[in-house]
Image (cartoon, rainbow, N blue to C red; front, side, top):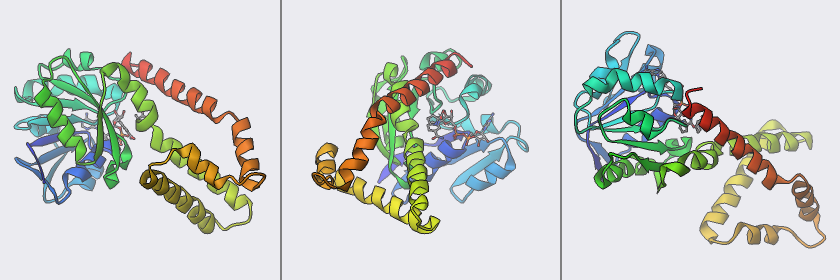
Length: 275
Ligand SMILES: NC(=O)C1=CN([C@@H]2O[C@H](COP(=O)(O)OP(=O)(O)OC[C@H]3O[C@@H](n4cnc5c(N)ncnc54)[C@H](O)[C@@H]3O)[C@@H](O)[C@H]2O)C=CC1
Ligand SMILES: O=C(O)[C@@H]1CCC=N1
């Protein structure tokens, strides 16, 4: 059982909503309640429930201020470009002991600390939070105490695993685990298209690829073996896999991932600069 103090989520979209789903798990108690905000009523209605007071700014323009009053944790889930003006607008309504946590890509704790007087953390979760399998990177701002970091860790452990990192590493972590689910889904899309090209129906191709990914990942996780060793076990000498893997190696997958993560890192720097 995890017990957390009152929480406000400012911007409960894809990521804020995924964290919210962890807070609603049966083994989590949020003392003092959960308040969330969105811009539109359509979005607010999606996350409203018996345990969730949900404000739409289009109907309740002071919804963000109302949500953060009395909240001990304030999670900022708006787009990076919106973070500065959102923090500035709630700064006067924050409780003095509120811990402010942003999940926004690129936005630094220094920027956050220039806008609110409170301790701040930066977090980088990922969408498998929805199924309790997030990986969240967590970095402390200059004012955050060990107790603040422990509180942030407890929050994100409701949706998966937490890795504390110095802030200098959080953008790099974002290019791996924050964006990573998108790489995996893209891989699945393209692999499925190749399977369809071999004559399987879209349903059968989807099942073959999905189950292959799930089965391989479960084998990797439960065996504790090195992925290269597990790959060798599939790759019979002079067999079929050997030919396919040679084609993938010729395409320099490692270089491709290095270029993709470098591009994400570059974008994080642009976001930090407000672009
Ligand atoms: N989607 C992902 O996989 C991840 C996203 N993030 C970060 O999460 C943040 C949000 O991204 P998404 O959830 O993907 O976007 P999203 O567009 O799904 O969610 C943003 C939400 O903010 C709300 N919003 C906009 N202006 C607002 C305001 N002034 N006050 C209150 N709510 C407001 C919108 O109603 C919307 O639901 C971004 O900063 C992103 O960098 C971090 C890790 C992973
Ligand atoms: O694409 C983005 O900017 C966010 C951060 C990591 C995942 N989604």
